[in-house]
Length: 419
Ligand SMILES: Cc1cc2nc3c(=O)[nH]c(=O)nc-3n(C[C@H](O)[C@H](O)[C@H](O)COP(=O)(O)OP(=O)(O)OC[C@H]3O[C@@H](n4cnc5c(N)ncnc54)[C@H](O)[C@@H]3O)c2cc1C
Image (tube, rainbow, N blue to C red; front, side, top):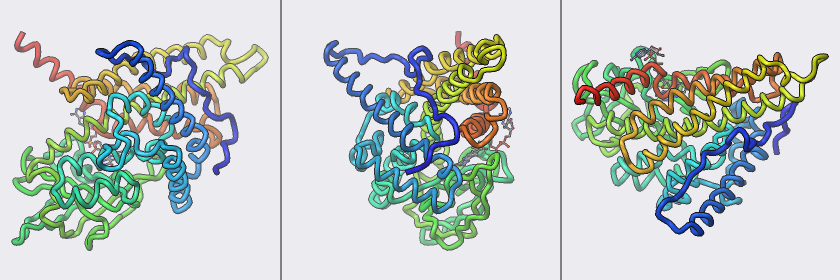
């Protein structure tokens, strides 16, 4: 369907670089574990093959956005449905395949090797569909989650504002005023909202009670984007790439039963969503870092000068070593966070460690791969510019490094106060 890029496509991960961490299902007979493991390996291979052979060739079209990108994405989604790969982690009651999170985590890395993998395979809706299913009113649950899981509707999530720090939601300036009939009127501006222009629904963080600076009094409201007063203001390209938008709410009416979670419960719901969302991103960033690493190694071996291949230079070997070290040390951190989330345990420390490590890893691996490619690494023929961009943005989105560093350190230090 889509043409391949000018130069080599991504190489398959090699066993020497440890593409997936090992896992064991304890408590089951060994032969049964083997059957389950081989089924999951086969599923992961099918997902990996789909992303590499179908999604990656379409990346230039998908990256460009617009109607052609939307049509291409729909085609890929149809193929994923036909091949039984659609909505793997979405709950079965919503029409997904109900793969438990610990098992999905084993293949999320393969799915996320391309930034477009989760959307093409229908797992991008996991966060919104499960949040609305878990925290929505009966009307919300009836209307939206199953349609999100089916890919009929798209949702986005709007917390960050131009004039207040996203790292401190207590300062949220967007307000929702209660009307006499119990419905709401939302006013304010949000920005860097991923996918807002094509979304049918936006979950918006707004102050329903109290004053700016209060930790309480914040609520999440679900707003259909065809509501009067909702407006997409402008696109905000990130290093030239599309996908982020500034949006405005000018007295938008929201029904009383479109609160997500209770009144004043926004931060609890958001924290739950962010824990899962950050872990999903980390899994996907692992896949993208592995992809950059593979490209770097292929290039180091194939690019040859009068002194032989680039791979013979010790400073190139140093890039390979450092990136491999980062991959091997980050992967267990990410899977530890995923395992804790899957078990329903408190994973604040593990998710914080994983988020910082995975973002740094992707930036480092992509940057090293660009360096080893020379000018070709900055040009249009490899996915490296997109990987580097994602790696840089990763250190800011879903909370910048500093926020996670201080939050993890504080939590750990508190445990020593009691010692
Ligand atoms: C590609 C991309 C996609 C995004 N998607 C979404 C989305 O879909 N929805 C959404 O709501 N938002 C989204 N965002 C916004 C993102 O979540 C915020 O940018 C992020 O949370 C930081 O908020 P801020 O930009 O307001 O930075 P600020 O809060 O203004 O912080 C700026 C800087 O100050 C420093 N800093 C802040 N707090 C601390 C601290 N406690 N200690 C030390 N230093 C600190 C850090 O260096 C930080 O980078 C996206 C951003 C990007 C780049």
